[in-house]
Amino acid sequence: MNKNTIAPLVVVLVGVAAFGTLLAFFTQPISCGCNGSSSPSSPWYPCVHNPCPKVTINLDSDQFNSPTNVTMNIRDDGASPVALIAYYVKDSNGDQYANSSWRGQTIPPAAVVPVNILIDGTTFTFQKGNSYTVTVVTSRNDLYSFTITY
Image 1 (cartoon, rainbow, N blue to C red):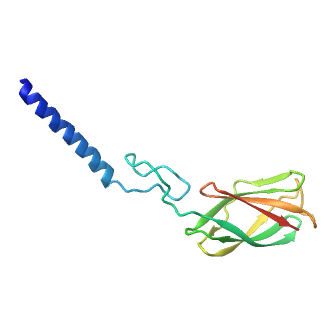
Image 2: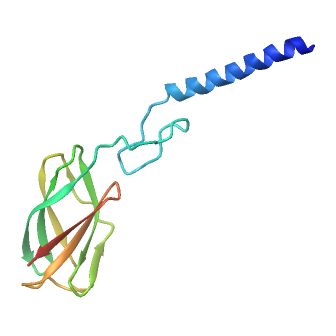
Image 3: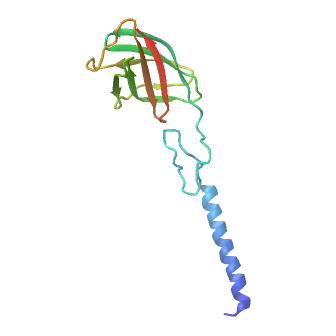
């Protein structure tokens, strides 16, 4: 091969490689997932922004049912459903009960769902006149803390 054919051949090969890369980039689904995963469905498309709608949950009301049970009515004020996956209850002394293997409800947007919170009663029990902090964890690993008083 002479020098006059190598340069155009390199240009063509670089162009084919660039076209192949662009084709792979634009034909992949553009999704970063809203299920708690921030990894893209395509290795060619980085998750530059989070396409998932913002989730916000709020406590509408609570009712103590026993010294180890409280029902919290939680509202999803966001634009997408939110799944609850764990909760932690802390008393004013700093004692904490954790339920990290709990699979709670999925709350639809603009809905209020009763969420039953149970503690085992060995670390502490709910006492009248005391305040407790209940932290719920969503499937997107967002933490929401609510203060409730018995």
